[in-house]
Amino acid sequence: MKTIENLLISRGQLDRIYVGSLKLYLWRSLHKSSKSRNPFYPDFEEREIRAGVLRAPDVEVVKLENGVEVVKSVLGQGTSLFDRPGAFGESNWTYFEIPEGTEIPNGLIITKDSFNKRFNATHYSISPNYDMPKHQFIQLLDILARNAESRKRLLINV
Image (cartoon, rainbow, N blue to C red; front, side, top):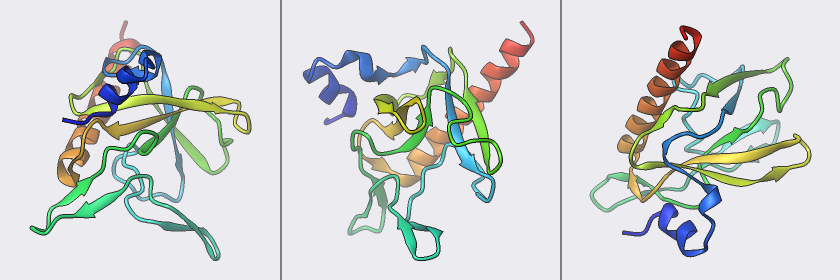
């Protein structure tokens, strides 16, 4: 099976792979106008970010002949994260922390993508590690959100 993890291993880029227990703190930026029930959901469809300006989807979704929607596993595509909070400012954005030690569900991968000079932060992506049904990807993102919340509560009570 083709996976993002195997691709990065074949390139010798092990430092870009995060599976299992997260080894750093990451933050998801979500615009305050967002109506997503889980901050870790990517944009599955293009959306207008201002009058006449469209933003491409964060992931590629294909519909199979049987009607099942599948999220493609593509390096660098997925839910955007940064290694510092406040990358987009505070006035229009909310930030969701994924604490160090959060368990990443099997089937998801977080990859280190590149340093973004504009935001003075390194960009990471939450992606399906292999092509998977959209409903499965959503379930795994829900588990990740619960794991992050549980980890935050645990760290507060220590």
